[in-house]
Image 1 (cartoon, rainbow, N blue to C red):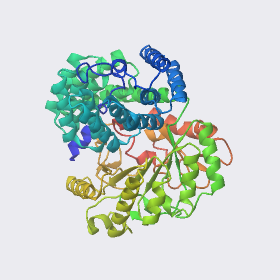
Image 2 (image 1 turned 60 degrees about the vertical axis):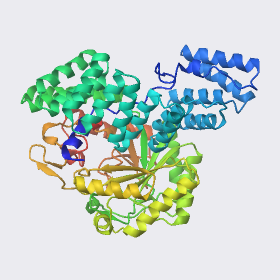
Image 3 (image 1 turned 135 degrees about the vertical axis):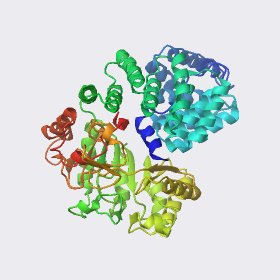
Image 4 (image 1 turned 90 degrees about the horizontal axis):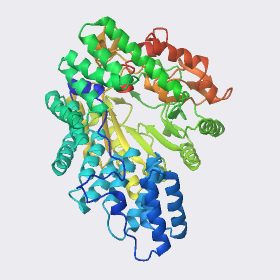
Length: 584
């Protein structure tokens, strides 16, 4: 992926979205959800059939709660009623309860008597919601094996291909969908999105304009069209498209930010400054309206790390020691639960989690309490036995850090790691997860040390040869300003591979989506890069997490971002993460 493609990624308007369950396209498989599922198994009694019909009616009327109660009653009487299991899963999906949605629909697929392509299609949607794109693709393939002309399943498969950057396969799937259902606006918009990512602005523009001709209300398609025009330096046209979005949605912060970019490129400094400022104010306004609620918490079980990776700011670490106790971990989870935060990631700024002597006990405890748990690891502290135990923990995902394709390329990037050992560990983990049919999704995040497209290509090809898991190549950022990478921009005084010169500071999504809890209970506003507690905002052993997340120390940082003036905020003042539309 070259630099132009990466810029397109930063300016993109969003991925093609998988469509909602039940909203089946006429002509794809022959009807709507209620029609397709109207049949009942032969052993279903009249009262069950009547309840099913009533449940479908409530679903169509939008009375989801009442519909779900009916399907629950049916399942209490017939626990293996495939249709009720399917609908229960659909309703869980619509509440963003993706884990339970997958469990119900998987069981429905196993039990169904008459093979229905809608069931694996909806399972795929739930798996996309869990970001388990590999299994989602398998589900969509099963739907398509039952109904090769199922246009929606082709579209949804594309949505599961794009996050893994399998763009050519996604284009093929979307063209198949377009052939089955011509002039569908969402499919045209999706094609435009991918082509924009690939740097093919002129062809992308054709599809995006067609999508908007068919459905002018597609906000993300219009934002992508504006991005196309900005890439082609057709700046007044871009401003015009963004003005249309803003007229319809005045609080659309991303459009204000993109307008700032276009005005900056056009040399209209005052207009650019005003647009960027409006974008930041709207970001903060939205955050305040949701009560400063975060999405996840990073937890540092181990401060110790055994590698010195070239893309990491390890040279600034003040210490490389410290493990969290079980007592403090339990308290941390209590605080998370009290604030409705059930998504946790085991890693915070520094440390290899699997160096913790009781790591598996911690993972099993968190999963047992109902938390959605992910973990980030360099993959070195593993044996075949440890891989087997990991597969049985029930965590949601493991992110395995690896880049390179041979001993030299890997060991000069992940300094201290041994190529043969780590690749063997990766195979063990992938095999163990597959053998146990584990729900844990394995993603290899290939953070490279440069923006070399050749390095990315060779890494991708090598990892693809090792097993069936998600590979996510990533160009490094400047790690909170601690790494001198890419080019130096004199105006912003930043090192970065990003085009920070024609962008501006936005409100960093790390601040508004998460917090980090260190091994000793201290809390940082930045769980990604703050190894030394420079952005410490409190301590859960002394005050509640809620008070910390809304406290004066955090608000001071947030206010600086809102004003676009973070020169006095350590780490943030040199970090390139807040630049670009990725924060919207």
